[in-house]
Amino acid sequence: VYERLDAVVDEILADPEAWIPSIEYEDIANGRVSDDDMRKLRRAGVVKIRRVIPKDVTEGMNRDIMEDFKALFGVDPDNPDTYRKNIYGDQNPKAFTLGGVQEMYYSKTQFEARQHPHMHKVKAWLNDVWTNLDKENEEVTCLPELDVIYVDRWRHRLPGFDVQTGMKEHLDNGGMCRWADPAWREVYEPLMDGKLDEYDAWHVGKRVRTSAQFFRSFQGWLALTPQGPGDGTLEVVPLLKESIAYLLLRPFAGDVPVHQFCGVTDTGGSETLEITCKWHAALLRGKVSVGKVEAGDTVWWHPDVVHGVEEYHTGEGASNVLYVAAAPMCPQNARYVAKQRDALRKGDAPPDFP
Image (spheres, rainbow, N blue to C red):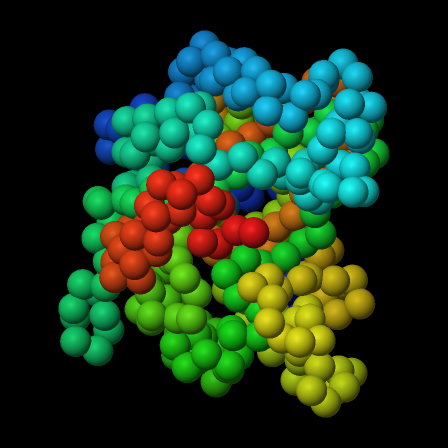
């Protein structure tokens, strides 16, 4: 695994732009995505889908959510001190400093983006990248064409505003459970048995029966503003098989103390697996920017893709994205959206959030 990882990381670094496919929305809508782009997507686990929502519509969405944001928190983007006082104050912080993520879920703009017909078509297409038949009995595990809405937050970063830090590299949807949960163990069984080439990263299987509350086929975001490298935006290790194999087997290497599961918190209870230089330097060598995107473009990544947010925003304008997810209907997701509906009615944060 280590040798294969090093070799593939060398390939990534030789041409990062070519490694992450960039697909036009119209090609998805008209069924003409190339075989080469599909091959790249399945290898990297990351894809940029361009012009999902028209640029002028997206720019209007950005204006609307900024007006809501300013009214809700009493901030002025031209005066970062208002952010320090009203959002990031020590007494009652209203948002995480990490990555500029804002604790807003139910704005008009967010609902418009999640329910846009182009977004639905893209998410159904992404769900269909996966194989949804159980290998044992060929039962359908999920319905890719029936995407359910996962309510999430948005990211708003000001240039040069050092209170908003980056977000360290990590995996979502499970820390210690990736080793301890029987369903996760079944998902990763070929990797733990040393059969890397038998592992199918795109088979749903028991992923819809894990201890996680919700199954996302892809996590993603809609760019509300133009952004690229240096603008405090997304970085990824665009690799699936070798990456997850390395992460799962790393705790069993000779240089790791007994009972240390690299990237898991001391309590083992976090839903995030942290990727650190101490334990995962060989993998982090493959970290690259997702590249330049425009307002209306989207970026999507497989739930096993290592990702983070740049530490600094050294660009010129605000870097804004709305988090979205592709999520096929399945019993696990149906239970979650029922709880999510109840949270909305009460005005509470969704079940996955504080």
